[in-house]
Length: 179
Image (cartoon, rainbow, N blue to C red):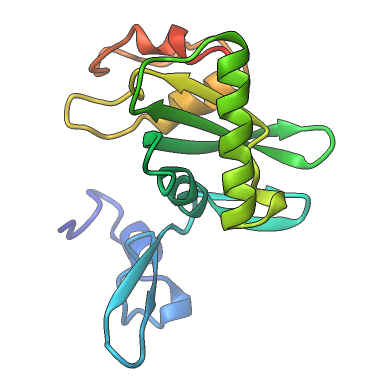
């Protein structure tokens, strides 16, 4: 647990014990809902990881969960936003399948199938505009998905950030093609 920020204790207080909570509660950055009957918590995802598509605010975690709920096909998914002229922000999904990588028309058919599944699970506004397939996702050796790299790929930007901590740097080229 962090106890302070060296040389700036006031910044620590403002960042982790916001005034909205009167300094009584620690803000970890994750959202949760507590069930009144059972007392159990449901983690809803990072509170700062939200997409704004045509004025609708959606958490990336709920779209990822909808993709992964297609259990026969999807092993893992990550979702980021990218700028879009029509909707303001578009949903871009990176998907790891439980089978070999599709190509051409087969990839387009699977992408349509997954879009329709997300539309059924959440609603049409949450359908990913781009779906990119890869053998895995860009992760550090400790298993954390490097979302900043996914955002750069989604925006078709050159990767200029440090990629030395990536488990598999070759995956960045593979995730470049959208369906």
